[in-house]
Image (tube, rainbow, N blue to C red):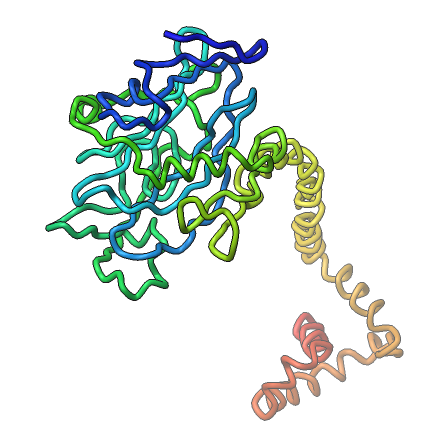
Length: 356
């Protein structure tokens, strides 16, 4: 086993003397190609839109972080023709073991195996594949996770909602802050099945990405300018998709410290203290208490109406005026019922007459 140092933090461990995407059949994901162990955790999976599928028979292979020259570099996600009908792609993943991050290469097989519980998106939510299935040498695409809307040649489609239990973008398993998922019974069984190594287009695709300095994490800070492409090895042109701002996750962090600042805005709590507004209750209570002594409410009303009914001396001729008011008010109530609602002052006078 050859051993080569990369600075202080990285080392390459050659596994079974097979190239990164060698020509020998793969036995298991941990034995495929070069096992790369790094003590520096890889960046998060960038957020990007999936380009449109080129045609029938293509399967989505998600992007991943590879290591070379003491730095990670992004290998964009792309559409790849399956090596033969019935085969599905199991993505590679970084796993923490023996004090370092070890790369487990991806492979083709009749079942999707274990890929560390990493949420690569677009059907690869951490376990299995929800993007489609093979039936009679034809692949049926789940349109909820595959961009097949613009391709009229693809007719084998269905729609099934996919809910990912892992909503993070962590790109490695184990270690500090890594995904803690363990392989299921089916994933263990898939690891022992016959596998096919990545196809030639995938090998060339990674080589092209390795030669582009802008895809290195030290240059793009985890947001590669080319995050995905419709065609393997083609990293320029209209079918290239950049990484998008991580609004759902990056802003989620800053929003929490800002939340306390929103608290003062929520200080309407003192405004909501309706105690002063509910104080009318004591006023009504005081009015009710003042009601029994008729002389007190009467002068209050007269004082308020002083400008309108200037002669408060009408108390003198009250005995003579009372019969007139009692005879005329019923007629006004019958002929003009609306005036009682529109002229509360007349009601007040009627009340005074009634009190007499």
